[in-house]
Length: 156
Image 1 (spheres, helix red, strand yellow):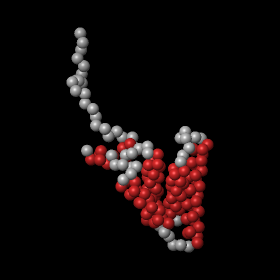
Image 2 (cartoon, one colour; image 1 turned 90 degrees about the vertical axis):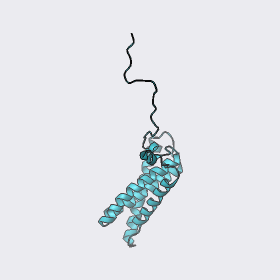
Image 3 (cartoon, rainbow, N blue to C red; image 1 turned 120 degrees about the vertical axis):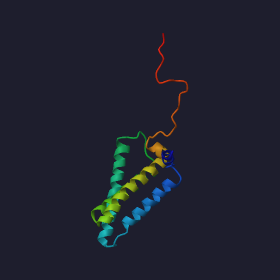
Image 4 (tube, one colour; image 1 turned 45 degrees about the horizontal axis):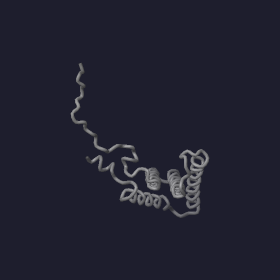
């Protein structure tokens, strides 16, 4: 059952979360490395700060005002979410002000940032320990009922 092996990979600890976080860090570093002109530095910082502010504002509205989750979020989860917003802001800047290859990498990086934030927040709460649990896929083997037939026998 190859499918079960992939679905049973731990996303709370082990190599998968570490690999995703390292990939995310490399992607962010790549998006940050540009010709260091005053204009580029200012715009990169502005877009990252706007993304972080938008994420914090979204968290404030959804959690603190609307009480969507029924409980306050930890400072760790808030920090992860704000960092996610900042990296999305960085990716958006690179989508608008770059060549095609950098735009493609910025789009792919946004997906990696979202996966990294999802895995990190999930690990913080400890909700879904495996890929299957995160995707709500049941990997338990089916039970077999012994001594039953598909068609019931008529009773007299």
